[in-house]
Amino acid sequence: MQSYASHPEASRGRLVAEPESANRSVFQRDRDRIIHSTAFRRLKHKTQVFVYHEGDHYRTRLTHSLEVAQIARSIARSLGLNEDLAEAVALAHDLGHTPFGHAGEEALDHCMHEFGGFDHNEQTFRIVTMLERRYAEFDGLNLTWETLEGVVKHNGPLLGPHASAKAQARPVPATIAAYCKRSDLELSGFAGLEAQVAALSDDIAYNNHDIDDGLRAGLFELGDLANVPLAGPVIEEVMGRYPGLETPRLIHEAVRRMINLMVRDVIAETTRRLAAAPAKDVADIRARTAPVAAFSETMRANDRALKEFLFARMYRHHRVNQMTLKAKRVVSELFDLHLERPQLLPPEWHALTAGAGSAETARVVGDYIAGMTDKFALETHRRLFDLYERA
Image (cartoon, rainbow, N blue to C red):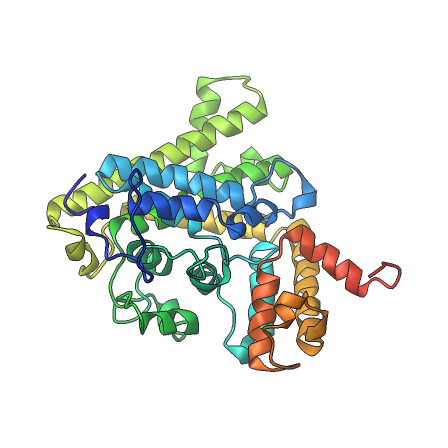
């Protein structure tokens, strides 16, 4: 393992001290706790793009998270990083997503606007530090400092001159700010390389696998990708090498090659940056003015082009838009009803509220709805709003 990797024996530890495992490193235990969490299991029925009843073979948040973790682990190994930490951050990064993907998040953020808004990254942090209630001695998962840092900062600093424009435009989420008073996650610096790799792996996974799902769903055709950088040339190469190859195999062959090209690019560009400015240790990585793990300029342009294509041809497709509108209505109506009548919440949730319409109740209702799967949200909405449905 390289000197700039995160070494488990040098971990800054957990908020609540625990005896260490005799046969697992601290980062292995973090990964295992995430996998065994309730929130992780719920990802099975949370939308990536397509709602669960639209087909069995489309990605869900669970399969997406597993694919991100596989890519992150491969890159981490090639760069001599801590594979367990990279995998833990990758597996945790989507725990806070609402039902119905980004449509659900937009709706819940709108509903909670006057109560501080909703952000899935903060919700992930709430889950791993507060909402998982499985252990006798603490709430949350009591993850190591390094894993929590990666969860919070995998997309970059939240404060300071190196934070993104999006991060600078809004205050640090309240849950994260409160936690940092107890254990400073150094929000003005970059995360370690393992978290940076996990963020890039997320981009690689969802771009390529959304192309796969979009083609499978018939939202666009292979020919529509002809002029899209990276995708077009790879598809042309596969078609030339395997004439007459049936479409499902052709799609898979093209997608796996695109993933491979993007992975190799991250490894090459990160290696180049480390060679140009060698890092002594992980503290040196955190102190940099820019991320060290990155795409090359050419691949960044390819990545943007893929995103633009998917935005126009998939995320704004009329079939997806129709489900988006339904999903937003379901989330909004569930929120408004439970905020006005918190007694409709399950008893263990109702006990946490502080009266109809209050900020405390809004936060509880937000946590409750964010934890729903697509299926549970639809069933709950039908039970509460369908006059012919039994309570």
